[in-house]
Amino acid sequence: MADAIGADAIGAAGPVAAPTPHRESGWRRVLRTLLPFIVVAGIWEAVSHSGLFHPRLFPTIEAVAAQFVRLTVSGVLPYHAAGTLTRLAAGFALAAAVGIAIGIVMGRWKLAEDTLLPPVSVAAPIPGIAYAPLFLLWFGPGNASTVLLVAFVSSFPVVFNTWTGVKSVREVWLRSAVAMGAGGWRLFLKVVLPGALPFILTGLRLGLAQAWRILVGVEMLAAVPWGLGWMIFGAREFLNTDVMLAGVAVIGAIGLALEKGVFERLERLTVVRWGMMT
Image (cartoon, rainbow, N blue to C red; front, side):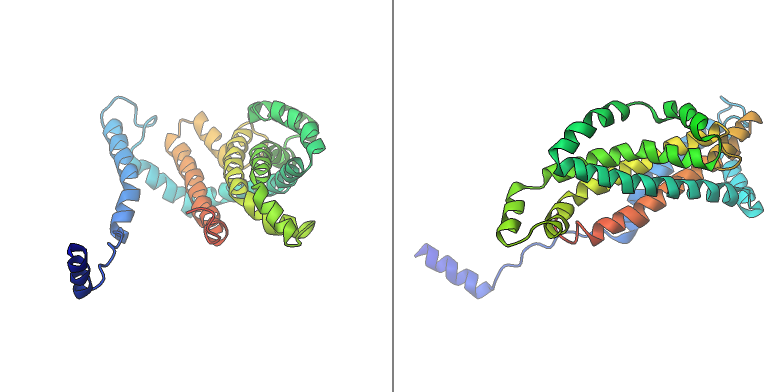
């Protein structure tokens, strides 16, 4: 009887709407993103005005911003940034192509895995800067040695993550695809590659970070006559800390732009759209 009354009451009141999830407003999202930078900027300003450091060693944010504008207007900063970006694009593109290919081969064929995994595992933990003297001796100072070194060092995360992604593709997916008539390249393109794509994207992210680190380091070794690393190292000789920080800010801004404009968009168009991750 009580159940019937309850059912009648619910029917009279109509269906109960499910609570809608709270959506964060655009301003709150922007504020939440900027809050860490505001805190860091406040701490930096407090230290720079405290007198603990000489102004040339610890400049204010205003001084760094003024130097950034001055270098940009004069064309110095765009010139060095263009040189660094060109080397980064060439080296990372080579690392992505070779690293993904090697990772797929290792993941699909046991013989390739047994042959390639030991040397890759030994070479990967070695700091990238340790390879720099060898590449400079083999290929000479200049763009060729820099691009090849960037490609070599940044390919290791791509290889490992691609290999892990291919090995992690569920066996039930493969069996189901084979049972439905898929095989060869169709099996690879429709099942293996999409299943491994989240790992591949992670490997590309890590590889890009490796590429940035080794590229700026090699440019600081005077392997090339221009670039952000060369500019930062040259500013150190004259205690131009504001120039150094302006170069560091450009590196960070480019890295953020690549993360938001390339990797996140690629994820939304692929693995998020396919329902493989949120």
